[in-house]
Length: 203
Image (tube, rainbow, N blue to C red; front, side, top):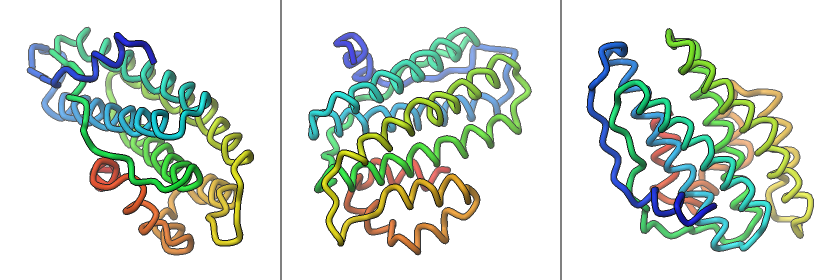
C-alpha cells in the first residue's frame, strides 16, 4: 500500500448530500459501504504489519483499490466522501491461522453485503462497481487466503481452514450454523475485537 493511500486513511469521513440523483436510502447505502470497506482495509493493514507477509500486502493493495474506486464513485455523485480516521485498535489474532479464518469470514460477509446492495440498487454504475468488488473478493482475495493457509503450520487443535472455506462457499446462507460448528464466535472475539465485530453486526 502506498504512503499516499495510508495517509488518506487518516482523514475523517464526511458525507453530505449534494446530489439530486440519489435518494436518502441510496446515500445511506453508499455511506455504510464506505465505512465497511475502510474497516476491512484497516483489518488487513493491521494483519500485514503483524505478520509481515507479502501476500497480505497484495490483499491490502486490492482492498485499497476497491475503496479508492468507491470513493471516486461517491464523489462523482456529488457526495463529499473521504475515508475514516485510522483506528488505534490492536489486532488480537494470536497466529496467522486465526487471522486467515477471520479474513475469510470478512470476505464472505462482504460478498453477502454486496449482494444485498446489488438487489436493491437502481444505479447502473453503482451496481457495476459492486459486481467488481464481488469479483475481486471471490476471484483474487479468496485464492490468496487459501494459498496462505496451505503454507501455515497446522496442529491438531487448529481450525481446518480448507474445510471452513469449502463449507462457507457451498452453504453461503448458513453462516449461523457454520459459526456454531466451528466455534467461530470465539475466534472472532479474540481475532479482531470490536473493530471487526462491528462489521458483522451491521451486515
